[in-house]
Image (cartoon, rainbow, N blue to C red; front, side):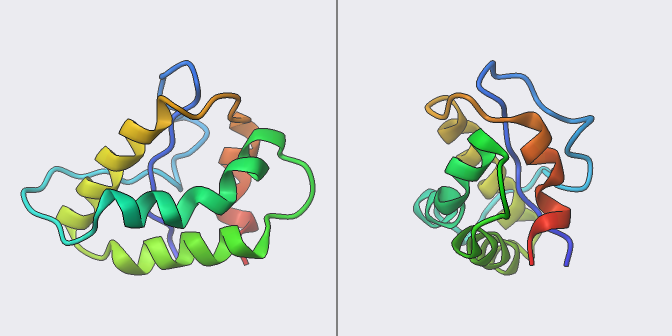
Length: 107
């Protein structure tokens, strides 16, 4: 399953090179997904993304899969991307290696 999510590191710069498989943000007009749904989906991943230690928690995998299933349209992916960019400003200490490895580690 290709995961469609956008992440930013704490400095605010895109981790584009490390997250080519993970990032997919396209322009669109309307979306059915809310920011609450997006942040709830990725919430269980934050601790792992900060440490990068151990296996990806099952709750994180479930949240990522839920987000991927909810963002099947271009407008939904755009909305999810905007929500994640907004939320990223309050998330510090993201380990770019953990973020880059997330797509292959979600079971």
